[in-house]
Image (cartoon, rainbow, N blue to C red; front, side):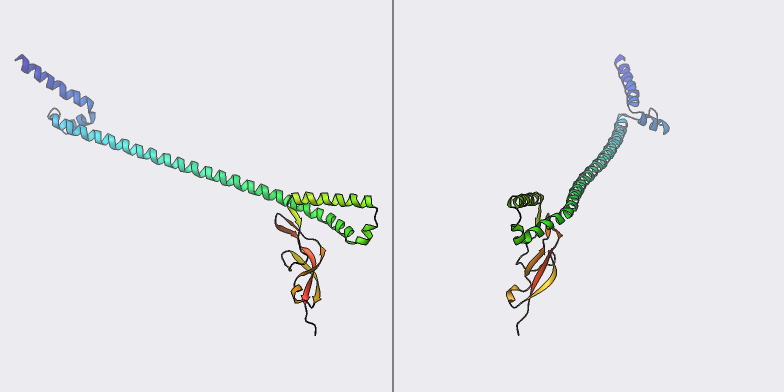
Length: 214
């Protein structure tokens, strides 16, 4: 008698305890008018439903977090790529600006070089100048040419080469009966110069033109 009473008390404690653990199950059964009329199997099945719902919610939350993480990562990667591109563009523009500034300076120096060339062109008159003074001027000229060369500026080598409209400006045609000389440079009137491989001033030249002798 005492044993049966103890067993009933234990069973009565089991249901409220599980109700407390699963308030959603308890509420649903109360709303259906089934309070106290469900057994352990029903409680376990509905407990699994609740747990499944919790797992689904957690999975959805995890998926949302992963999606948000990917969006942040993609945004950071795009920002990083934009920064690198902007930095490279700035570096390129800086180099171009430096080259442009030097090119302008070169354009102002070229007339000075032309003056030296004109002085040296008349060899007979140049040889009559005092030797020490002449050597001093030639040394200054060589220094200037070296500075330009170190900055990737050089005269265009044109003499006896074939006429190239990208490098030469023809100011006179000289007739020749030598067919092999045709379209070749006969004389350089004014030196042309290139800077970083770009022609900043074409050479002014005279060009041979073949004409058959009758």
